Image (cartoon, rainbow, N blue to C red):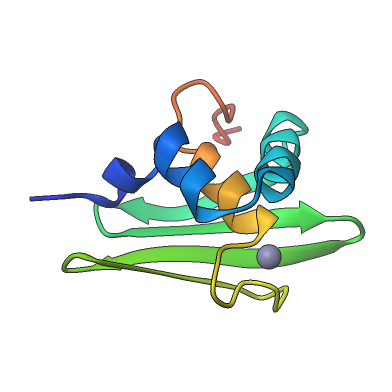
Length: 100
Ligand SMILES: [Zn+2]
C-alpha cells in the first residue's frame, strides 16, 4: 500500500512544480519555516512561515489520488512553495524535533 511519503521524493516533487517554486520551498525548509502539525501515512499537515504570515499547507492521499491545499491561495493546479516546503520537511534530518 502506498503511503504519502512515497510522493515526497525529489524527482516527483520537481515534476509537480516549476523549479523556482521548488527552490523557494527548499529554502523555506532550510530556514526552519515548517512545523509539522500532523503526519501519518495518508496525511501531512504543516504550518509554514511565509514572511510575516503563517500559512497552513496540507497534503492528503485518498487511495491513489494525491490532493493538496494551502491557505495562501496559490495552490490550485499545482502545489505552491509552502506545500513543497511541507513535503521536504518529511525528509530525515530536515526539521529539528519540536519537543522542547
Ligand atoms: Zn502556499
